[in-house]
Length: 343
Image 1 (cartoon, rainbow, N blue to C red):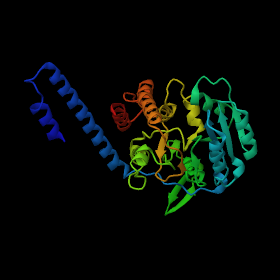
Image 2 (cartoon, one colour):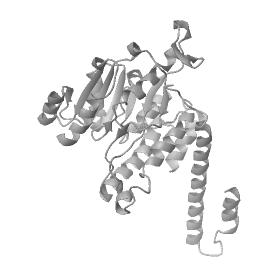
Image 3 (tube, helix red, strand yellow):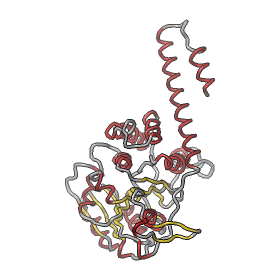
Image 4 (tube, rainbow, N blue to C red):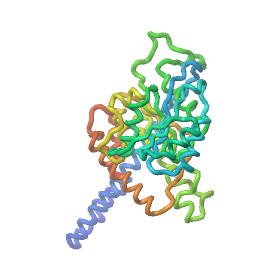
């Protein structure tokens, strides 16, 4: 790659042509250089991530804490919401009275409240919400109290094992593995520095994406988002730069309180939330095992709108948090966010 870039810089620029050709030639080389940087950054992350893994502890059943499960909805129909909420009611947990499920409805709709009553879950309606999803989730935080918060988008259907595969990570400061067995730490053994802020499971989809559908290749090519969710985000574990993707996640309430709730001045509140949590010294960790499945975009227009929002929001959040330059993140994390900015 280095030899190629040197050849491109010193031997291929069209200096003998007009100024426009030289300018566009330089811009092309800059684009190629950025591509090489992001490629090497990913390769380095892959090497580091292979040596970094948090093991899911085997904790005592009575130590499982209360958890609030937020299903955020704006205008989704009740048929879709039923699938998600019904699956949530079947999630395994040692003491089901500790799992509190909420519809967080900033549409304040009567039909959603009735569905919540039918499923024996809680309803938090919000009228006149001016802060989009962040406002909806912050309203839910103000009206709940559990130490852990699980967030799901309206279309994301969890497996019954979701909580059992995520919640125990938050007990890592209080458990230690010795001779292949987990035991609870004594009070003077508690690892105060290991603060688990967020556990992110992969995004997965039960319908084919646009590429799979239009190329008739559902069984021969992976979902287009799999690379980030099941590869890139996992690689970011080693630099503690995991991205919160807005759903399929369990978050420490204390971490959210430390950053004053979900941020309001961004269109990608999820991405910025993870950065702010990392800046407060918390560990964010992405797991490999799929625990949730949802709906992929079904039209070109909706995909373009979604990806445009993501691109604008990432740049906006990086600027809001000064993630590339802040001393509160490791050099590895800052390089990861520089790569995201360039991408």
